[in-house]
Length: 251
Image 1 (tube, rainbow, N blue to C red):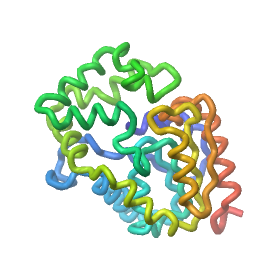
Image 2 (cartoon, rainbow, N blue to C red; image 1 turned 180 degrees about the vertical axis):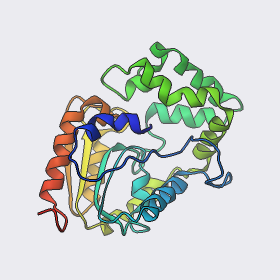
Image 3 (cartoon, helix red, strand yellow; image 1 turned 60 degrees about the vertical axis):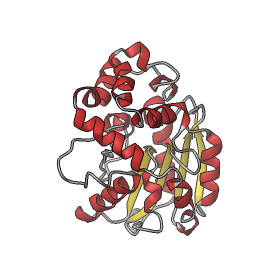
């Protein structure tokens, strides 16, 4: 998902410096990453480089849907002061849900991904429970679906990137990353969609148990796309988390 899925929480957040980084799992092929190395680990490395190049320090890192922030823990997490994980890929839930498994299957069959994404041309198909409809409790506007998936429909290079990403990401990458989570002793918030079917709340609870200084909370009336379904409740939990875990100079 791209930054529009976060437009509601960031619009109602505080005036502290913030930024939204869209993970480029299926972005344009413009030479900023190797064609032979497109995976969740690559996206995590890009996220770390993003923070390093901007010289961001004491970062409060918030992630939804993709779980790549977990891959930084114990590897390149020096700039992260507070970590927030909302419903996302984690532990043994990869590829997640029926949607993730369908996507993996499609990328392994010639022409499969092209056929699969054609469903996004028709909003009523995209809103089915086995597609985006299973990730959001609220009705997804057709304009948002078009913005998210238009590039996949119109650009074969982007479809090729996504297929390489899915094939290159190791199925057990998040289980391996979980071994490092107990080393993250800084504050963490695990905020999960209470009605999530793709990323079950049980996964979120297990994830929180691995983080020594984590608080687990379920966001009501929300599935996977927590920032879209219930931005108000998520923003309230983010504010509480920041206030309860102030950084130097925030007191």
